[in-house]
Image (cartoon, rainbow, N blue to C red; front, side, top):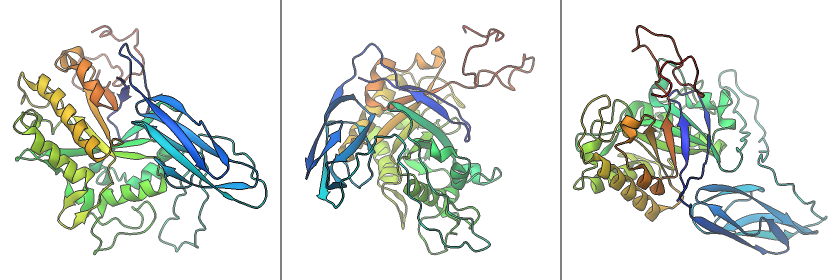
Length: 390
């Protein structure tokens, strides 16, 4: 079983590099195999990989042949390309006879996207940014939060993920947040920002304004365009958060879990956002941000059995996602303090998760009026921090 422990920061523009680590429990491995149609080879031809490993695969044509496309557990014609190992995988490289001998491509983690010709822009819309994704080394993820309310006072739009350069290094975006309604079902916390707001030309990622008659608008339509420009980026819906965790304890009860899970999958995986607003495949998985199982968060709506119910919730989420597509991601935001994580069955939950985002922030802040001034989200411990070791 794989444990992937990550450090996450709650601010929208900060990105952190996450490193997969092996622990004492032996993680399962899956087989990668390949075959070809025509004449050529695949590098690697076979391999054994841990769950969720991102493997770079290169099709190498023989002289007089050209690579055409992928089949099996890959599609398209990007070469080299990457495949996420979530189960045993088999890919087929299809080669066709060409004219001149084809030089052997050099595998590279940074495939170059050929820009499309851009017509002369009118004075108003900005030119469409050209995606140049740079995948991180295998086994690592670069994850950032996008907050839905950023489009208001902060004027931070999905287009800024591109213009800031963040899209070039990101592999995952957690969209924050969705909530749980009074019926213990998944719900949009801000339908206007999520899928109703008509983005203007200067707010849109491609300089094209939304129209009044299109069904999907808002941040969700912008994320759809972002994924088309950067197909390596996965988008997860983050459910809960500091102010919206007060119904998790009820939703995770045995009699409520199935309906809650089904509602989340129907809304965010099947894409049934609202009547007439349907976009399946926009989200690549679910992130659970329950603050906190068995402990107080913004409120104290918890019960002792949260510990076991949290494990069962994740187990059932994983099973339902796997029924649809084993490649769908399931992650959590987990507390960093022992007081909070002692109420979580850490030795049991990790087998259901692709990774864990560890909330290593809020170490110091405005709630300490007597100081001393110190780091809110330190990457390393400081000898000047009087709370070291606590």
